[in-house]
Image (cartoon, rainbow, N blue to C red; front, side):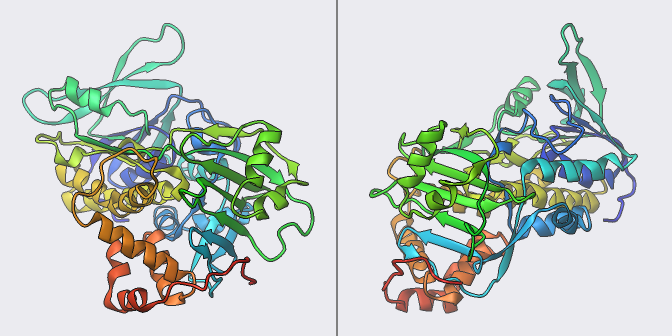
Length: 455
C-alpha cells in the first residue's frame, strides 16, 4: 500500500480486536505512528481474552476475508495454515443440510479457513507488534472524544487507566478510528460533541447458541471436514455446526430459536445435539473427548448504526467493525467485513491525502451492505424475529431466494452463485443474473436427498 503525502502524524484506534488490528495496519501507511487502545491486557500467547466474547465460538474465514487479510498482511493465510489452521474446500468437504434437504457436494469453488479466534488475533497482533510505527496501550478505557474549536473535527481521545484511581488524560491524534465492538460508546461521544446520534436498525432472531471444543475419536470424521445442519422453522428451530480448528481439535456450535437455546451442561448439550434434524453431529461427539467448557452466547442481533446518514460528521473520525454494523455471528461474515473495511479505509486515506471524513464513513457502510442483507434476510425468515420487514417486494424476494436455495441443492451453477455471494466476492444481485435466474425459475423442486451425499 502506497504511503499518502502529506501524512498525518498520529492515529488512535479504539479497540484491539480484529477490526481494530486491521484498521491499525491500514492507518500505519498514512501516519507516523498508531496507538491501539484496549481495555484488556493482551495475552503473551494465543489465548482467549475477555474483550472478545465470541472467542469461545466458531470462527471461519470466508474468501473475502482471506483476500483482505492477505492484502493487509501479505502471507498471513499461509502463516495461519502453518500454525495449524485447517483448509476446508467448499462445498466438497461439507455435509450441508439446508432447510429443503441435503446439498450435493459439487467440486470446490471456495476455501474456508478453520481457526480459533485466539490464533487468528495472536498472529495478526504479532505482525503489528513487529511494526515500530504501532504501539499498544492496554488496560485503558476510552471515555470520550476530543473536539476541535470552530470546526467539525475529532482531534483525539480522552482515556483512563483501568487500575483504581487512574486519572483521565487526553491523547491527541490527527485520526481516530472506533473499533470497540458491539458496546461502542460512539453515539454518546458524538452527542456530547453536538453531532447528535445515528439512526439505528436492529433485527433480532432470538437465536442463542453454545459451543464446545472436542477431540474426535479416530475415524469419526471420515468423509467430511464440516457438517452444517440448518434450522427448518416452524418444524425445527435448531441448528448446529462442527468444524475443524488447529491442533486436531473440533469446534461444535449448537443453536436454537424462540427460546429453545442449547444448555451449557454436559448432558443437556448432548441431548440438544441429539435433537437436531440430522444425527450426524451427535454421532461425531457422543464419544469424543471434551477439550473446553461449554460456553453460551445470546447477543446475536443484527444491529446497524447509520453514521453515514448523520447530518454532520467530524473530520478525522471513523467507526468500523461491530461498532458500526453487527451481524448475527452464526453467518460468519463479521471478520471478513472487518478486514475488507480496513482495505477500504486504506484506499480512502490514499485517495484523500491521508484524511478521514464523511466519504470514509460512507465507504465503511458500503462494506457492510451485502453482509447485512444476507444476515437480516436470513433471520427475517424466522417467525421469532423482531425487526423491520422490507416494505415492498419482500415476499417475492423471499420466494425467489428460497427457490434458489432449493435448486442450489442439485444445480452446481446456482450453488456457485449463492456461494460467491455468501463469501462476499459477488453482490446479492448475482443470484438474479439472467443465467442464474433461468435455472432457478426452470428448476423443478426435488427430489431431495434424504441422506448425506458422499464425497
